[in-house]
Image (cartoon, rainbow, N blue to C red; front, top):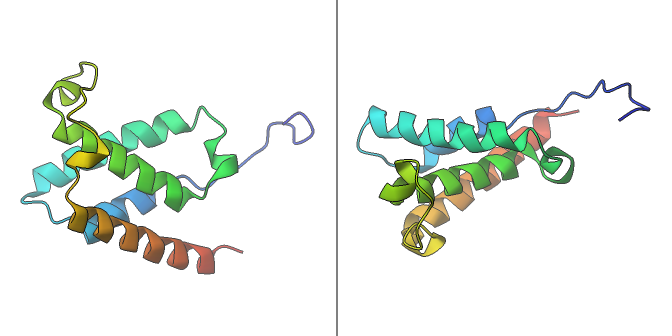
Length: 117
């Protein structure tokens, strides 16, 4: 970082997360989409304070953030701000939805990889 004079630009995962939520998740209303997006953005914003952007693509980070947000949303205690319970784990994700998220993440990575130069 010193050699770069702290001049580092990274593509964040916000756009990829929105694309995943809009294309892969069938939520009953716009309010639920906004809530999932906000939870996802919380995780993405927190990840900016780590070196995760040096290790993974923005699309992989978006996928992880959406999955974590989904788990948080499924866990009423965590959604209310309390510590997550065991109920809010990956086992609570319906498999077809998880598969759809994976396919959308793959599509988003393909689309994002071709536009970066």
